[in-house]
Length: 192
Ligand SMILES: C[S@@+](CC[C@H](N)C(=O)[O-])C[C@H]1O[C@@H](n2cnc3c(N)ncnc32)[C@H](O)[C@@H]1O
Image (tube, rainbow, N blue to C red; front, side, top):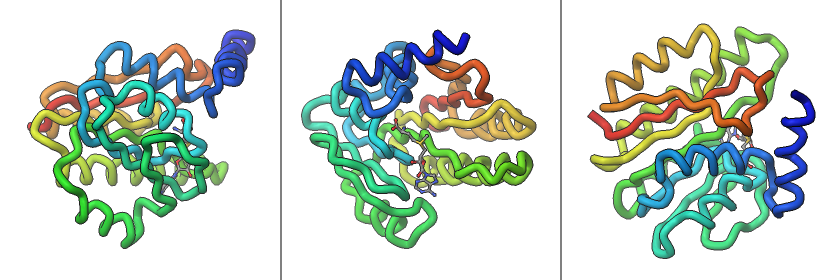
């Protein structure tokens, strides 16, 4: 299995992607065409830029993408990057100043692991809930929310919250996601 997983990292290197994570988004995009349809995209947790590269390739030429991360990120053409904390006042201001409603919010965020599973799970749940609340405030009528989360004791609760807020809820485990990792992607389509 390790060989298969290493293949994605090797492929990313050969094909000029900054991270193997690019293939996870490519695989999800292949099924749902989320990026292709969007006019305004918010990408949360974008560094080092693997997803931003895929967004750049797949988005409509006029579509705008704002990418946010705590860490610095090298420029990706046609992506507006902001180095800031999602929980900061700067981020709230950025959201308030948006021209129009995003039709796609993406999050590949996860916290720096403390090593204490319960603490890490709760911190990741906080990030997930933040994304859900954000989508309730700003997502367009036919918009989508895609977030990284984890297959743990919180997943059922999170799925139920998504189901209260979206017409359709899908859990995806793209082939490029390590089978040894509990990460999964939760997709909410069309806000209720
Ligand atoms: C798995 S990485 C993202 C990889 C990226 N999708 C790619 O393809 O290159 C997760 C990112 O989430 C960011 N992150 C975690 N908490 C954050 C927060 N509160 N605000 C902004 N970014 C955050 C981390 O700094 C990290 O760069």
